[in-house]
Image (tube, rainbow, N blue to C red; front, side, top):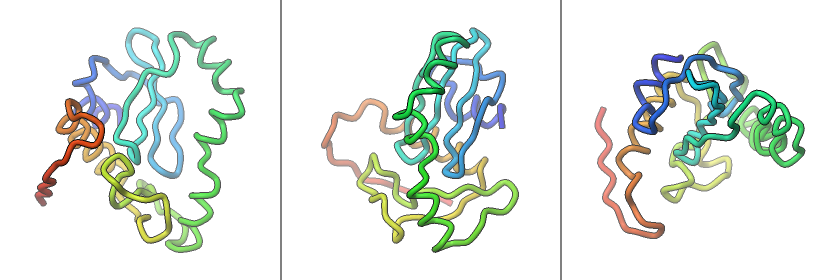
Length: 143
């Protein structure tokens, strides 16, 4: 997965070296070669630095808001009841990411290969990185 993260998201200016955690919706917390901690949120098409050091990450990991956001319990319960358990290398996803208008509801939840999810989110993130909030776009999806 490190290769996929670097291929899809390295335009953000990091070199991922270690995966720290993943969740059922394909969110990834990883460490870089500069010992910074980053988080990919495929449903939001985002990849942001969340901690400057291990001690800062440890503090963040005990924050109740962070834990609730990370665990996504309500969404995972909906996904499991609608789609069943995940198989190896699978994650739940929003079929239409929230950042481009997708809703956090059962009609917009699917399953996807984890590597494909990371690749797709990084590619789309790169394509929309300079858009202003509310700007109209035309989305072209290729197989």
